[in-house]
Image (cartoon, rainbow, N blue to C red; front, side, top):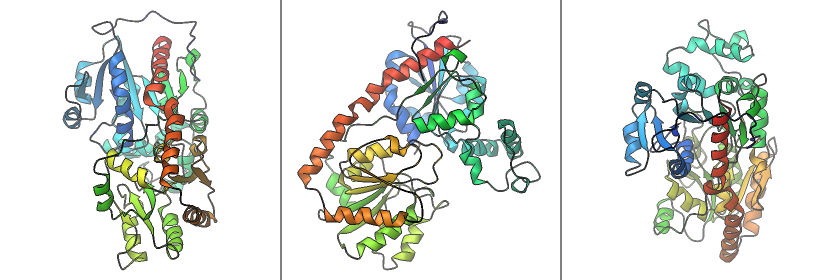
Length: 433
């Protein structure tokens, strides 16, 4: 854990102009459809107050990103401009990393220009696969896995060294975090579960400020409830939601591990006795992982089944979360991700069902019900729908719930958490060689 006490604090090198450190932030950025972009945006105003801030986008994305921040007190440049400039001696680097292809461009920079790494997922297996595909170096993957201390079974490895098939246990072993930890000057994780898994994956890398790698566990922030939207009625109408409907929501990107089929089966059981029920998948479909729209057409050939919204901006999603009577925030398998959508769903004031594995039990609220993974999962989901229908809350009760959750979440706002982020950056700065 992060300690603000450092007996070996070194004199600070030269600062950027104006007496502030230069901070380069590598991250997916708007308008990319990526939760990591949404995450970093919330901290940019505070970082810009304390640092001479530069955002470093992937080549080809800096123009679109800069257009999202007109008049901002920071610059947006791409990685080619960053390399041409070379970070000055008085600069610090922050990497915002998750297990997706939008982060693959950071890998070479992370090792060449060590900095503080925000680790959102403790299995970075997919990101490394994408990075090697981008470089047409797929054959390096088996070597990288071996370098981490593991051996891939021979029948999973193609003759050129690439992975012909992916053993599921490779994800569970949190491979590749060791490479991240080895280069990092500081690390941030969001949950006890993720920290434990990360330490296991980086088993031989000394962590902590005393080893030049301060580690802080800082939870994912919780934003306050969105104010009532002037066009909320129109948004709900666009998706066929009426005043008297009982709305079930699956929010976020519709990836293959969100247990979409189980939700569909539970809903199909419940809707026969509750005609007011409606199920909405509120996010962009990943049909290559699970073709939820096709499965809906199969189960409801008359076209009267659940709907898929497609990609939603944050405001539209907040409108739906604020209207949902029950939200399903499910994930299995889970490899240490910390869900930003879970607290966001709770802030809507409706009930929320999530899994009892990974980091999900660490966010506590009386509005959350946990389900266990296994053969009885569909029965549990069905029971949660039936329980909702049997005791629908009054509008006044829901408003009170929202107020209570807003008060509970004040200590988890970006502004409240930022001093801990700044403390990690300062500790990493002081501990650097």
